[in-house]
Length: 312
Image (cartoon, rainbow, N blue to C red; front, side):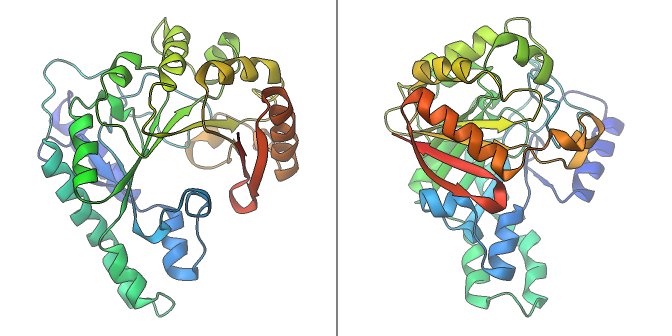
């Protein structure tokens, strides 16, 4: 990663204290235990991805292959932007996929060791958790910028793991080059129009919106993936233009749509007011309107995460 050694050490220290573990000799990838993995182990409460898509919450590996790079600075992002870059420079060195996946699994195991002392944790579930079966490439940054992501996803398949990849849609060239398709491919579409996109998602490239539109056009070509549009709902910012979303969804032709409430946590509390967090009723109301506008069915609601599922 570009930057001075002192800056890198400071950033790694911050991430370490926040529960991240950076992996690989070139230090551009990381893992962090998902809160739902912890909930599954401690309380047998499972995330909506288990309910809707069949993964096992306690065996999910949450990771990134591009820790420091993102083309947006979204107001609702719970992460700090300290040390974040827009795009990797030509001098960035990249770790091989096998090294990354091996070290990610080892880092996940080291983070889970402490659960052995918790009497509430089922021992057999914990032993299963040491061998993850789903890789959620969604932690932080734009993982499509990792040049070997296709090989990384292919490696997960060889190891009988499923993969969920989340992208902001601002790297359509990299999306088009993805030759190995993940189990679930998400585009995080959180603006119904360019004006909202510029205000809420703060693109750092001038053609950010046109990049998103290109990614939406490419979306339907991923026939081997379950295609999902995720809409993070921010009250007072992006919940009114239902027709705008409907037109974009028609372009993308996803299998599912997940309208999900923004949560007032982390660094986002410095950028947004608490009342920007929608209620469950707000999410249901939005999902109902979007279902009518798109012709999708309202399939389910997962109350703990304030997220709805729309399907064909």
